[in-house]
Structure formats: C-alpha cells, structure tokens
Amino acid sequence: MIDFNIVQFSLLNKYYISAFLLFVNYHISAQQEVPCRYLVEFDNNFDYEPIFHSAPKDTNKYIYKDSFNSSNKGVNYTSWRYAKPQLSQLAIERRKKQNIKIDGTDYFVLPEYIDSISKYPIQLIRTSRWLNSALVVITDTNIVHQIRKLKFVKTVSYLGKLPDDLTPATFDPGNISTKTEEYNGFQRAYYDKEHTHPRKQGFAYDQLKMLYDTLVDEIPFQKIDFPIAVIDAGFRNVNLLHCFSHLFTNKLLQGTYDFSSNDTSVFDDDDHGTKVLSCLAAFDQGNYTGSASNAKYWLLRSEESSSETLAEEVLWCLAAEWADSVGCILISSSLGYNYFDDAEHSHRYEDMNGEHTIIAKALNMAASKGITIVTSSGNEGDKQWHYITTPGDSKYALTLGACDKKGEQAYYSSMGPSSDGRIKPDIVTLGYETVVCSPMGNYTQANGSSFSTPLMAGFVAHLKQDFPLIADSVLFDAIKFSAGNAATPNNKIGYGIPNYLKARKLLQLYLASNFKEIIWELDKSENLEIRKLNDSECQKIILKMGTQIIAESNVQASGHVFETFKVPLSKRLKKGKKYTLEFIDRNKKTLLMSNIIVHQ
Image (tube, rainbow, N blue to C red; front, side, top):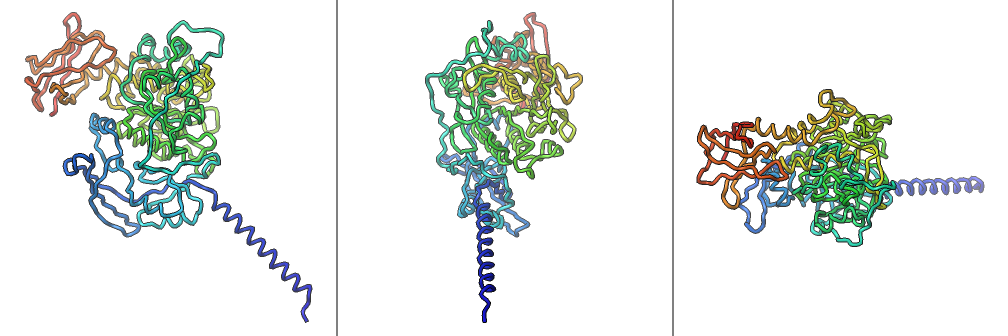
C-alpha cells in the first residue's frame, strides 16, 4: 500500500527542486546576458619590411613580412603580404621630419584574425594597432572561453559592463566619415559678472598673462599650422556657441569622432570638453580667447561620464591612434584614471610609474610616433588617493597641476611623485577659478587641472610652431626651466608657472650653441633649406666653411622664431664637412656662433 502523504511530499520536493533549478538557471543566464566589453589581444610578432617600389604605384601599399611565433600554442609560420599603413600623408610626413620609421604598430590588425573572432556572437567595436587587439562586446561568457582557445589569441581581458545608456555602433572600417557638419546661428556668450573687460582677450586676460607675460597681446592669436587633438568626455553645444564659430567658418575644425558610441557626434555628450576646449580654442573678440585660438583641431571623445571602467583607457588609446593617423602634432588631454566601478580594476599607487597602465602605455606609444602630449595631473590632492592619476604619470607627457592666481597649489591638485620617484606634476598654471565658456553660453569660473592643461597646451603649440624639430625632451626642459620654481622643484607645483618669453629664449640659445647637426632637404625650387634662428636682436645669419662665406641671409621680421635659410645648389654643402653659423646683430657684431655638420 502506498502512503499518499509520502507521494505528495515527494511530488512537492520535485516541484520545489525544479523551481529552484529554474531560478538558478534564469539568474545564471541573466548574468551571461549582460553585455560586457573585452579586449582580445592577438599573439603575433610582425617583422615589417617596407619595400616601397615593389608595390604597384597606384596602390600606395607596402609589402611586409609576417612572422608569427606562438611558443605556448606551438604555432609558427612566415608569409609575405601586401598592406597599407593606417596613416595619412600628414602622419607620414611627421615621421619623416623626426626620422621615425614606419613599423608594425602602424598597420591594421590582420583581417584574418578579425574575421575569425567575428564568426562568434560578438560585436566588434574597434581594433587597436598599438595594442594589437580588438575591443568587442560579448554577452555570453562561454564565448569568451572559446575565443581564448584560438591559436592566435594571446589574452581576452574583461574591461567592465557596457554602460546602460550606451549602444555603440558596430565598427565598419570601410565606412567611417570624419565630416563635421556646419552650423549657423551661433549663440553669443556672456559673463556671469556685470562688467566688461578692456582687453581683447576679455575675461581670459589674467590666465593668459600668467603664461605669456608681455607677449599676451601677441602669442595667443598667432596661427598654428598643424592639427591639435583634444581628447575628452564630450563637447556639448560647441557647434552652437559664438566663441567657437570661427572653428567652423574658418574651417579650423578638422573633424570629430566619438570612440564610445562609434560615430562622429560629439556635440550632444558631456560638457567637460566644452569648457576645456574654450581654454584652448575659443575666440570672442573683447570677451574671451583661448591660448591657441587660431589652430586646427580634432575633437575626440573617449571618456564616459556615466561610469568609470577600464574600457575608457582603451578608448583613449583608440583616440590617440586616430590623432596619430590624421597627422596631429599635439594632444591635449584632461582625463585621468585611478579608481574604477569594478574595484578589481582599480589602480594602486605602485602602478603610477608611467609604464604599467593601458593608457600610460598608449601615451608612450603616441610620443614614440612624434606626438607631443600635454595632460592633467588629476584632482585627488584633497582625497585619500592624494597622488597623480594616469596617464599623468608618464615620463613622456608634460603633466599639469593646478594653481591659484598667487601661483600656489590648488588644494585639490594631485601631487607627486610618480611611484618611481619622478617629480610630478611637471609644471602648473591657473586651474583655480579659471574662466571658461559653459555649454549654456556664459563665461564662468571652473576649478581643476582639466583647465590648466589646455591653457598650457596652447603655450606648447606656439613653441612647437616656432621650433618644429626640437625633441620633446628639450622642449619640456626649456618649459620647466623657464618656470618660477625651477631652482627648487617639488611635488606640489613641480617647476612652477612657466614663462613663454624665457622658454623661447632658452630654446633659441640651445639651437645657437648646442646644435651638432642640421637636417636639410631640397625644396620644390631646388634650394637647400635650413632652419635658422630669428632673434629680435639678430639681423643676419652667415654660413661659413672656415673663412669662406657660403651663403648669408638677412633676418626678416615675422612672428616666428624660425625662417628658412636657402643655399643655392651651386654652393652645395659637402657631406661630413664642418660649417659655422654666425649670428650678427644690427651693429654687425657677432651674437653667437654654432659649429654644425651637414649630413646628406
């Protein structure tokens, strides 16, 4: 006889067990269905050997040798293939001027790898040639394990959940538009305070004078010939504000890109970049001007203000790669990272050595490509973290702290040293009550090293305009030693507030007294071009070999330190011979002499 109660109990048990299993499976599935970003890094080692003349002339392609060796997965092969470097002509010219070779990090990630991982249910966001990897969105963690097993995959790293408000477009390398729309009906900005300013710099006068001193009426308005990239969290309403209208009407805005959503729209995102950009690029006659208002710009978004994930460091790397590809000479970045929403991704102070984090490695790579980077130190000085954030820890960046109008450290400005003992920040300028243009169209005050950074980026841009071949190490030293605290640098304000006139003078003296060689090339009219010093006291430059005068040139008045010194081919200089550049003043007295060797 069967006991009914026992049967009923057994049936109830089975019911609850089944319900429990369904509950567990549902939540496991729910966890798996949360879209997360991953970085798929490929395990290969390229030996690129550009052979320019072996490819068809109309393809601008290069042939390279692909040597793949993965010892941990027992794979080894070598092949030859054609590829085109992911560089514009401007980027190639920048490399040539600085004698930087094109290498494997200038080429697209191998399409075979992308095709292979794209067969899985993933969303490809973008590829990184510097990281040799792909940024992807994956929902099912089982797919992550399957991709890790592929023979050419080195690692698959979790970068955090995709923000709820983000739906990025799938990457299509064959259909990327960099066109920036034109806008009319700009809104004129106003100032919060009820007064007007008598100077043409307007309410930016004090913060510009802090840097440019007696040259404040001249330098901020001078033309910059090369493009500058600004990497930030968004540039809300830049397309509507009067102080930015010249960027559109004068075609100074070269383009925009949002690496978070994978499109060209940056004017409807966060307003942090709007305020940052105003310190650098704004111009509103008699009301406001940035430190480099007559320059070309690329506006790039990598920061996601609604969350803080490790993916943003990868997005910054992608933005820096873009800046490299389009030929930018300078990057201004007011972003920094230490803590993340996923605590396991948060950095430690020990990581702040300029070489550990993804974003610091990306900055170092950008510097190796000939790009000058100005970045912020962070605003952690009054918080538990206390120290600089990354990538401000990089030894290849000019790192900006914030000071007040007295030149003293702003209480929140992050401090050094870097974890390997280097003085950081390098320098400071006004980052406390800095006048900026808000996205609502009013001139107001804002605090942070975010705003000292673009002020200094303009300063650096003007020096690079006049000293295009100076190495960043020399440029940064000149800037630091021009500053007010150069004799006793510390980890609160670094070397202090730099002075443009002094920095320029230091670079002039360096060129005149320490040049060991001059790089030259033939121009279109077949003249030998040599960059020469244009000091206000210098009236003539004479090129000699011994006592023989090879060529001479009067210094023409201009707004630039350098002029072009042309030597006719009939007086061609000889390889390895020693020559002298003599700088003569208006009284025909020798100011300086520099011994040089010309290399052909």
